[in-house]
Length: 260
Ligand SMILES: C[S@@+](CC[C@H](N)C(=O)[O-])C[C@H]1O[C@@H](n2cnc3c(N)ncnc32)[C@H](O)[C@@H]1O
Image 1 (tube, rainbow, N blue to C red):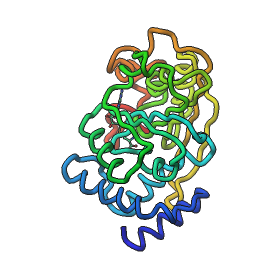
Image 2: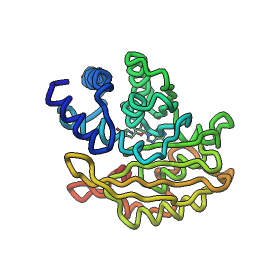
Image 3: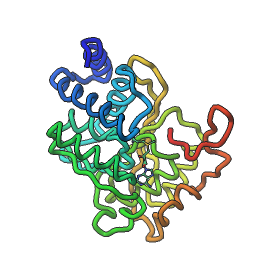
């Protein structure tokens, strides 16, 4: 990481109320690992130092600054991809444990290798689909927190994440700008799945001031046994969320899922 990159990370961290000075060497290692991994695995489209620092590292840290991740928590990162938000959070929060989950094995292998290189002993990884985990007794209703960044629209996240939470647990979804329709559909889906909308925060990413939202769902009762539906169905037939309501790309075509 260049000296300018270090200064940017520190400045953006300060905006979040974090002192990242002692974490700089690990963030530099993570940046190197991401770029090296990207050359083989196509992990991210964001490759400039500025984008990696602000849109991956700092963006990942935004879900941990409001006290949603208490010390000792066991956190599932649903759809971690190249390790976001898990790896930046694990660097700054040695007091919580992460289980980084992704359907794509090669990404999970990269995250596991990188966590080992960075000596992040609070990270475990698991290749698999949330639908399968949510139906397995080993993982269903076992976790205090689920975090998820840029994975799917809120009703889909509710179906994938709420089954994993114990009662009282929280699903913390990191989103871009959030339309009222998505929140309404998410609230209706959460209700069916044993959850409720607990908190919504709209804010700006440090330095860039891009719009972001954090939606916190709370598990209030057991998820009915028919959920999550089988692999792929939550995405193809989202609860309370029609294809027409999903985001469109720059050319006006519907995107596969409303990630942000
Ligand atoms: C757009 S990427 C985002 C990755 C990362 N969270 C980030 O913020 O950079 C979405 C990831 O979610 C994973 N994913 C989507 N649906 C999933 C499911 N049902 N179970 C597990 N992983 C899933 C995909 O494999 C992909 O790696």
